[in-house]
Length: 232
Picture 1 (cartoon, rainbow, N blue to C red):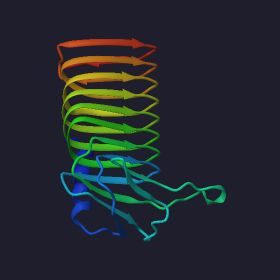
Picture 2: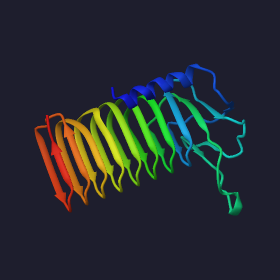
Picture 3: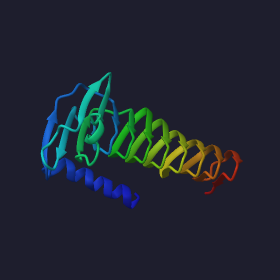
C-alpha cells in the first residue's frame, strides 16, 4: 500500500470513529449509489453501511453547502454567489455512508477519500484540480477519467481498467492490479497502471503511459511526443 493510501485509510478510520472537531449536521437523504462533489468540498466515504450524510464545519455555518440526493446521485455543491459575494468560502468535510457505490465524480478542487468499493461496473472521474484516493477496490470494469490538473490514486483489483487522462492530470494505479488496460493519455498527463494480460495504449502531446505486470498482448499508438512503456 502506498504511503498516500495508507494515510487515507488512517484518516477514514479517524473520521468514522472519533468525534468531529467542529460542529456537525446530519442530512436525511434518499438512498444513492453515486456521488457528485464539487467546489472544494472534502468527502470521506464508507460502503456496506446504511445511508448517512454528516457535514462538518468549523464554525457551524451550513449556509454555503447544498446536499441533495436525486435519481440515485448524492450531490454536494455550493450555492451560486453573485458580485461582491464571491471570495473566501467556508470549508466543509462530509462523511458519507452508503450500501454501495458505482460512480464517483469530483471537480473544482474537491477531494474524495475512501476504502472498499465492490462493483461489476465502476466509474471514477476527476477534473479541474480535484483529487481522489481510493483503496480496496474489487471490480469488473473500471472506467476512469482525469483532466485539467486533477489527480487520482487507486489500489485494488479489476478485470479491465479504462483510463483517460489529459491536460496535466495523473492517474496513479500501479497498485491497482487488473487483467487488461485500455489507456488514452494526452497533453502532458500521465497514467501509471498494472495489467497482467493485455494493454492497448495511446499517448500523444507529451502524455505518458507506464504499465507494470508483463502483459503478453501489447498494442501502442504514440504521436507528438507521447510515450508508452510496458515492463514486468
